[in-house]
Length: 557
Image 1 (cartoon, rainbow, N blue to C red):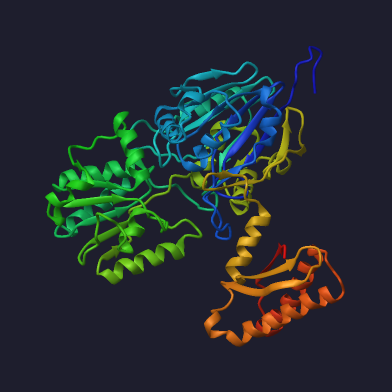
Image 2 (tube, rainbow, N blue to C red):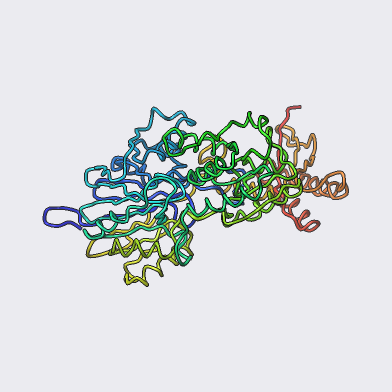
């Protein structure tokens, strides 16, 4: 909609990921001929995505509108907000704007992908406003489970949008300042068109505890287990958590070892930038033998039971340099993410079998706002429209109910799906269409070359196995020269199912000879009849449906 001066009065909000799941956060904000993209995250694969390493968002819309894309603004350095950058920026190359620590973590990724020279990077400070022409973006200080997290105020002629990023209200942060509530209030006084607010803990009443409360728990544990080696599993990105462990280790005269690639990378970057003080406690993994066990603390990745993480390898006795010993005390400074409970339980069982003592205490607090903090942001910002973001559907709906309880009209609350195009102005709001969205799967070096059909084949192979039928036909006449031979993998153990495989071979031979007796020389039809006959036989005998792959070779005689 345009006024007399042809000025556009509406702004579009286009989430391309991050709404149906935790992860893969990326949202385009479009006004006129300008698009600014908030975050660029990846997601971890679901259990049924066999062989897939990571999942990326579909950015087809950004590619189609490349000339409009002015830049990316990143709220913080978690994988679900920065993990897709090395892949997305192979296709789209515009400047990235973010805070110091977040940029350092992005640069680590770009270095790994040999892309440092290809991507323009701009470090900003809290309070800075980046001018994208028709859109301006201000970075606002917030608190989260990683330092340098920012909320964004997006200024357009149609109105101001606020995106909280992932946040909590922490009045006593371990490092740096508390969330800048004053700035939220100031912008709220000026008028806010829409608030896009973190929904992760929207189901939880009350407030999220301060990160500093975890320090007291560490102190109790260090005091109680003075004669044991301590191994603490936590998230690599939680610099404040690591700082508190370092503080406690210094107090009790222990040396600290960091283990896990992501842990070493993140903490190394934080130390270089002055976000962490090791207090002289850090030693390398190679120095571990220089100290008695009771004078050591290992901070490791693997708090979610990830199969290749350092703690999982220790528990399985596969770690090259760390061997779990009876008497070791392992502390999980985290809560299992929904879906990871079984993996965490398996690691705990492996550790317990070795003789280590595994403890769960109140050594973790969330990095996301609970209901009262969400209410606080709404009361300061006073948005016209509410757009719950960052969460699964149950989180978004809980957030919507919370917004409605605060007096926002139900028709001013939008629970979006990835791909929805929401048009907002002071006078109207509506979903006007959809853009292409989906999941781009990464398997090794392949990006997008594995799709639903391949995943379905992998699932079928995993569930029922495969039978390969090999036969050789004479060129021209179609006479059977060799076979059919059956090769089975993942279906049955052939030596213990010789009768079944013999019968299967006979059924296959009958199907082949039936085709040849009818002078059927169409290979596709021969393969089809082999598959049909063998599938029917196998199902009747075993109630299984293995993949059947006929292979016909042609030979000159």
